[in-house]
Image (cartoon, rainbow, N blue to C red; front, side, top):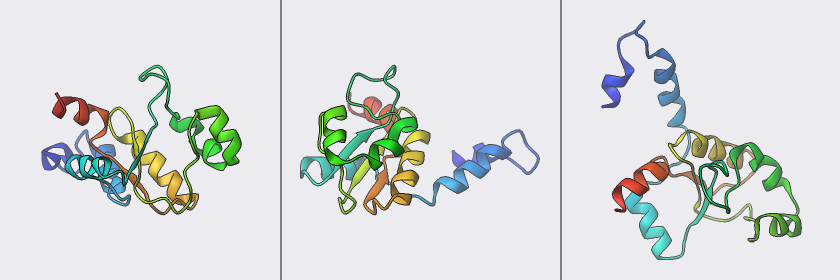
Length: 131
């Protein structure tokens, strides 16, 4: 299916072609792997959907950089959970469709969160396959 979306050179999809190529530079996690990591308690999910898309408990990608730069006490007070540590493994970001999770993963890795990964299937895949 990705091949069909790329289209020939000069088609109406040149921006998508670039986006697909760019997204491959970020570590990702598949749905089966994510389920296994969560079941074993070895992953931490961070929802970067907007507050309008999801209930409380999200850190919108537009606020993520400032959140990850906060001192732990401020983070705890604002988000009601412990701030991720730079050395945390399997710090998995997700959003509604995949793009913001990718951006969040890039940002977190740039800030030194070496275990940051993107669940590229996003909430969309999770909700479709979980029901």
